[in-house]
Image 1 (cartoon, rainbow over the protein chains, first blue to last red):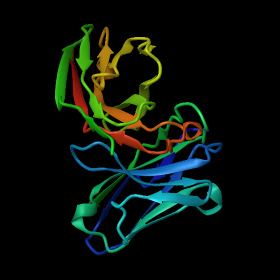
Image 2: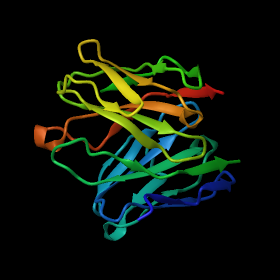
Image 3: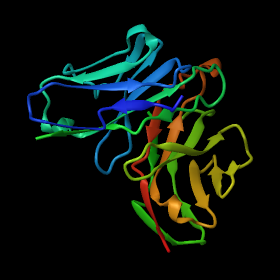
Length: 116
Length: 120
């Protein structure tokens, strides 16, 4: 297993277009997270899944954003009608659910979105 | 809500020297986890070190150590014998207690980061 994979690494699109990012987590990890990182800021939580269930969505995730994790494996994050403010790095992470312990996240390299 | 503050946007250090990165946080919880993550340019974020709040002993990982002051809500990272490969953005992060303690430890709250430059 090579860790968390994200695709594409960089996407340039025009305002109003739809984009989709894919994340493949570490295979034995049952939790998957999406974070957004804008220039000069730390990552901000967007949403997370436990297996296929989406258990929380941040208020940062407007109606134009949708995330899925069919069958509890890979996940997709779709942004509809992109706006320039959506330009950011979208980070995916995964972890193994633990009832105790630090529940350490493993991050992917990110998908950078540039909206023109 | 928890907040994490990194007051140093940029730091620089000479190779082989020691540098300390600062982090403060605000929380009303008594049990939690703190992390330092490293994000090299165009590469994925990796965990450097973690600290459980209930442990008084400061965590250490090779050249990396922390100074955890729970009462002051301070969590600084010390890098000894700095190497060129240490150059990166460093993020301090907070996580709530695990589910077994009544928390919901799925969310990390990050600071804005400190960009570390290592000069040869």
